[in-house]
Length: 362
Image (cartoon, rainbow, N blue to C red; front, side, top):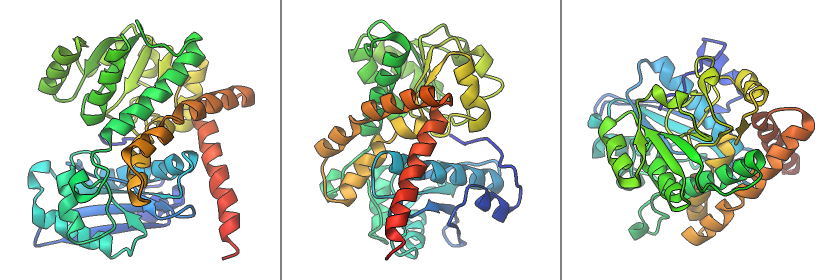
């Protein structure tokens, strides 16, 4: 779950400046044991909205690296999806066994202190129930249960957007967006990965999968008629599509040469260990890459719908447009002689710059 690429400047402010973050908040509470970091990357388009994940990081530096990369991705995810949101993310440091009501409510107080600049939601190892506890201390939370008037679990919508993006990439690579009979390797079968498997199974794809938790992988393999392989074996599978849906930075110097696919399309964040190195490397290998922050935007679209008073159907309708945006980005990258991640990033940055000029007169 950790985005492993090390930023070039080891100092705290150097790392914050590298991707032009606006604000980073370190949260600590002795009584509850809370240690958390909130990263706010850019709020030109609106308040920073992004989930909170809880993870047992090897070091505080690793946690900071994670939240900085993730919050930056949220900025581009919102911008390219046409949402009036900025990019933010939060991490709670510690094993999930340490999670309790007091810790979550204390975290909610820190969110409240930002006065709406950051809106949280669920992410890895967090649930709609956890959002209920956080909501007790702040109104700046989304992804609440439907029973509380919220949009519920965003995972199905994230999976739907990933599915749409995968089909668009398949059309580019194979001439048809049908996934029937396509061999697809799914890395990670958590909430989103499982919903994605449902779409792929219904369309008749041949599935191979893996997960950090072997029992979860086995359950998914039995449920979807898939073949289970080890975590490291997933890169060596002879497949049409590789779908990273768990770890970040799985497209790196060690793995790219092992891939035997024509398409990479998954719901994991920050799949490229180094965008400037591994984005072009995929093009050189003839692999069509569906930019991660574009095709996994469904969850953000879903919680944004909750914030503006929409509903699940409205979120699904907007998420379906990921197919067309992916098609446009892939065509743009080819026309420019660049790679899809760069083309998608430029498209997002152009919208931020344009809206920034509008807001400059306020």
